[in-house]
Length: 127
Image 1 (cartoon, helix red, strand yellow):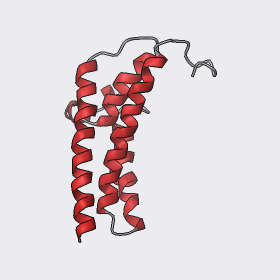
Image 2 (cartoon, helix red, strand yellow; image 1 turned 90 degrees about the vertical axis):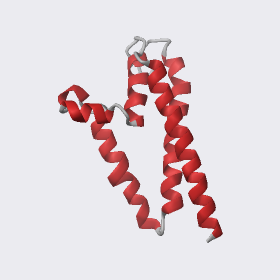
Image 3 (tube, rainbow, N blue to C red; image 1 turned 45 degrees about the vertical axis):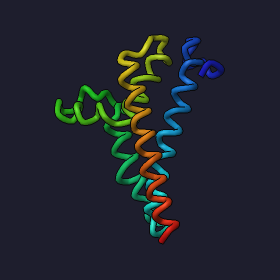
Image 4 (cartoon, rainbow, N blue to C red; image 1 turned 90 degrees about the horizontal axis):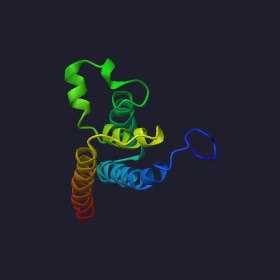
């Protein structure tokens, strides 16, 4: 971002650990789908039923304020929304709001997804 001139904020350096956590979060979620997969075609469910709707609802392409109030409340608990709420302000040379809440959501989803993936993978290898 600095090289391309998109942003000149030093806060971008703080975005790296957050982006690492986001990568781990979605890796753990992907491992759940991996453990449940019965075949190669099953992996399309991860994208079509999980990632794509989350991308459209999390505020990547358009502001979440355009969504109905009840849907905004639902999207508050999506891990991608938390990631965007943490990283986007840093690109704009601002500090994110609700850092503790968004980080705890990401860490919570990561921990739960990791243990669910671990249990499902163990179950699959036993069968």
